[in-house]
Image (cartoon, rainbow, N blue to C red):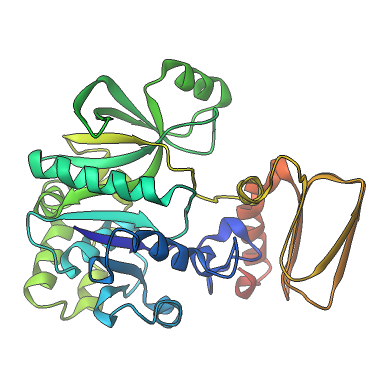
Length: 356
């Protein structure tokens, strides 16, 4: 089994810390290790470096080499330009040294997972399932803990395909876009919906077959690249279909299975999500970084700053996120942190692209 860690995203929802120049997968959000380093570390409990690859954009090559010096250079797959996730996943599929009937797992570099042992168990289970049912692609669906409106959902048939290791594997009925609160509440009551984590496992030949069926022009390019050992990658890659894997492949495919996964997962898609991960029940004022922070009578706030020479004081505020970097300051109500992407548009309009 081979594992591809997808690390090419720009992560601008955590602006101003996460930037295009150094997105969140390369940021130490929970300690000294970056999200990418944490991802590799949790996999090494069950897999070896020979199994692990990192897929990223060519502009992040030096960052990956710096963070993962133990990873072989040919295990870093470099997109010459951004063409969305369908071309990126296709390039990764032909770049890994996997046999045609070998499973490949696609995982994100910037997700938080509290139960790494459970994640690895489920990956092994998916691999065993595919040995018996190679026509399937297996998704990891996150067992929902709340009526979350920020995630897409997967609806599955309540009659399981197979039972293994006290775990049910189900047939996927549909992929559902992000719902409103009322609909999300109904999904939880129905009991056969999970959050779409974007993580999946599939055999190499099956995946390339899906490209041939649903994205034939991209499949042709991938075949040429594979046959010629990735020669002329830059020229050929720009001819691939610029489409996401979900829209281009996953939502069209047949034989999709899902394993409900209780792994303590979050995609850390906003500052409020990070605050939820860092905060305990006893502590409602959360400070992250090396700056000094003093507070009087505030509740449910996050202060994030690494400026050792600065003192930050907060008094009597509620539900606020404060994020300071060397060149930017964000102050937002927790309920509005998803609007950060609109700030990026304002920066572009002001010709401040270097701040994004």
